[in-house]
Structure formats: C-alpha cells, structure tokens
Image: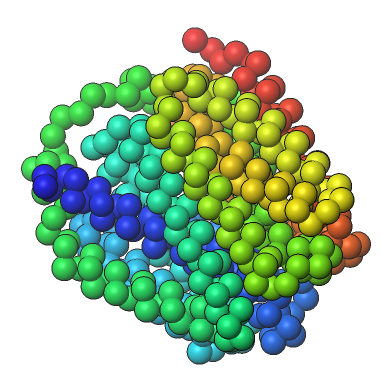
Length: 392
C-alpha cells in the first residue's frame, strides 16, 4: 500500500481518537455532578476550558508540526489526552477536572488543525468529508462505552479509564509510525495556488465586512447547537422523559451515530448536491426535528427527533466551510476561515452553558425550545449571509 494511504488511515484513526472524549461528558455528567456536588450548568465550565485550549493549541499547531513532525505530534497529543483522562478517573475534584479538560483541549487543537491541513493538501474534498466522519465514529463510541459501563453498574470513572488506555496505546502507535508521514522534500512540492492566495487582506479590513460577520455568527450558532444536543439530551431523556440511564445513553450515542452517517453519506454524493443546498436542507430538517423534540408527545417521538437532528447536523459544518468563498469572496477568504473556526469554538463554549443555565433556572423542558430558537436564528443568518453579495 502506498505510504500516502497508510498515513491517511493513521489520520482517520487520529480523528477517531479526537472524538472519543467529546461525547462521554453528556452521559457521565449527571453522575459526575452528583458525586462532585456541582449544579447542572457547571459542565459549561469544562466545555469552556476545553474549547479555549483548542483555540490556543490550534493557533500554534503549524509551529508544533514543523518542530515535531506530524507523527510525533499525534503521539504527544494522544499521550496528553490519555494522561488527562486518567486524571478524570483518579482525581474526581471539579477544579482538577477543569485542568484535565484544558489538557485535552491542548492536545485536540493541534491534532485537528494538523491532520486537516495534511488531508487538504494531499487528498480530495470527499476524503475530507470522511475524515470528519471518522471524528463522528469516535464521538459515537465514547458515549456507547460510558453507557455500557453505567448499565453494568460500574462507576463513571471506569469509562474514562477505558478510553485513557486506548489513547495511550494510540500514542505508542503514532510514535512507532512517525516515519511514515511525508518527508521534507514532499512538503516542499508545488501545489496549485488557491484563488484567495492572490490577495493579502488585513484582519481589521476583513472585520469591516458584513458577510464575514454573518459567517462567524452562523458557525457560532451551529457549533453551539451541535454540542448542546450531545450534552443536554441525556438529562432531558432521564429527568423529564422517563428513560433509564442505559436507554438514554444509547439514544445519545445514536444521535452521534446519525451525525456520523450524515457525513459519510455526504462524502458519497459530494458533487451531485451543492454545499449551499446541503446546508439549507440540514437546517430545515433540524428545525422540524427540534419541534418534535420540544413537543414530545411520546418517548418514541423524542427518540426519532434526536436521531433526525443528528442526521441533519452532520454535513452542515463541512458544507458551510465549502460555501465560505461564495459568501465572502476571495479577498477575505483566508481571514474568514480562521475567524469562523474561532467563532465555532466560542459557540461551543458559550451556548451549552447558557442553555444549561436556562434549564437550571426554569426546567429541562425549556432546553428543546431553546434549541429551536437558536436553530431558527441560524436559518435566518445563513440565508441573509447568502443573499448579501460580496465585492467581486
């Protein structure tokens, strides 16, 4: 097998590992907060610590990959993640968990940016969709593991111990295979210049453009929605809709599984359906599904809604990335890409905690209605962003 495909497989494995810790918190948090004596909304602090660290690590990822090489960087990231997950299991004190979440974020940011860059330079857009679907596999396996542990009356710490061991094994794998990644001569080969690379635009100049701000707002809202559903649906299903922990954990896992299915499916039909249409369809279906979740009616209706939301959400992020050039134009494209990633991290940090605070001050029944309001706002902002023409 050619070396480039071996490294692609390693990249997929890296993204599976990247997703493993992210989906576990929503299932484990009701048990964690009871043991730690924390309010419902305190998980927002963990999410905040993680996402801020992702932003910092992503900023320095290029420098780190040049110094360490991709393989050793991935090995270090898995080592840090595994060590932090051990910390979750062995030191269940809330403020120590915040430190561990920060370490996981530092590891994740560098992995995310580095592997994305490698695949973007060496493979097709279809492969990029499947790379992100690999993340979906990881974020599905995380809550599955935690659910199985809790269903067997095991402590939540055991779920984190299992995934810590997986991360540490992968650290060894990436260290051993570090020499497979592209060589220095490969890195310096000529690639076709992107249209946007002909423009040198200052960040302050880009920040004066309304299309740039609308794109940032769309990413802020979407990523906040994606994490909020994964974080708060378990509590809704157990505390309000009457499901057992095992049943609710299974359905939260299904949410992430359908999220992954949506990305895999889009990888197969890329080129037949435009990215703009993909975003419109995804948001539209998620609006209808969120109405079903809010209305409730029956447990099965709630579960169907959760599965549909995951299926609809999956392709939206990569498709919105693909429409960036169309929305903002070549002059602001490079700056807009970075600003959108920063806004996405901010959305993941702010919205889940805000929705949790709302639920704690009112009732968990308010959670799906809050989702619906934010989803409606996302639809309006995305439509407005695509109606405003950029300067040609």
